[in-house]
Image (tube, rainbow, N blue to C red; front, side, top):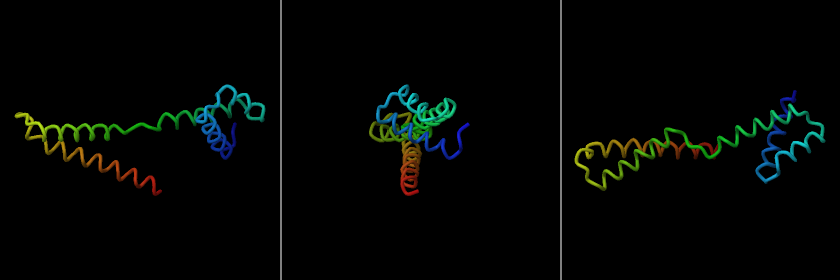
Length: 111
């Protein structure tokens, strides 16, 4: 089994190589030649695959907030009789959610 210090370094190395377009099969063979076990390589690949799939995803609350913001703006611009009383609620909830996401992104860049 991999040493706890080796696995994150190995995972970072694998992630960097895969992002640069290095084939996974060749990378696995190279790492086996360097002395890593198949189990260590599989654990590192699993760790990198879970990281890669999370990148680029938006939280559900953000998608919902953005949808409400668009709906609110649409209702403000287009007068639909039975929905006009909800336009400011949709707009306000949407702007709060999107604003929260912007603040979270700024905090992540700082920290």
